[in-house]
Image 1: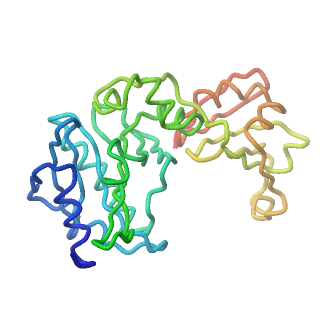
Image 2: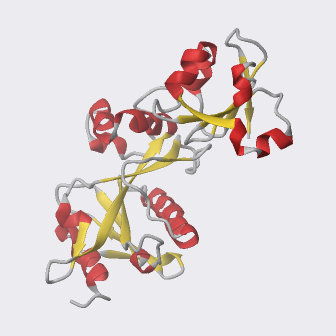
Length: 271
């Protein structure tokens, strides 16, 4: 086994199942391999993603578990992450959901991708040389609804699996969300201006990673001055302005709420 063959050999040998090559590349030289292992669901893997350069220097292949007939959904998710690897040289972090403002699979609620450890453990997740040296990883992608992604951000992947009943209950992309509502994670930061010391929030935006709030009285020059901005916790923001809680509990990424007063009523202005 040479350094150039360690990833292809790991993919071909993984799960003790015969590799089924899909003919169409995901993009560039990245191909897709299908596995049907005993005791597990159909697993789609990339072959060639590990050759993409990353700023961290990490090398990864990607995997998605699907129910039979939904291999196309796996292809979409793998392509999204491969594009990010190629364009931004970024390895997807484990345990932090990537959330989109709209579903990326037509006719489903699936709008988020999460990387977690696989059900198979280190023998699948770790790519090692014949001498045992760690060369990289196979990162398993989970396809989630926005509500599920928000739940994971606050409670973790294992808690979502408990909520669903099993990891297998989270495979069918046509499922209804196993948790209700959207919402901002409890640990999301809030970026706001110091004018909030004198005036209430008027526009509050959930980006998918954080909240951003303005009073509507900030000028362009004021906004350009970094000293006019602060970072609060979501809890502190709710403590000061409890009437924004309805939006925070239901917000989806990309949404902006317009508040005209402190009644808690708001109007959504989607990006």
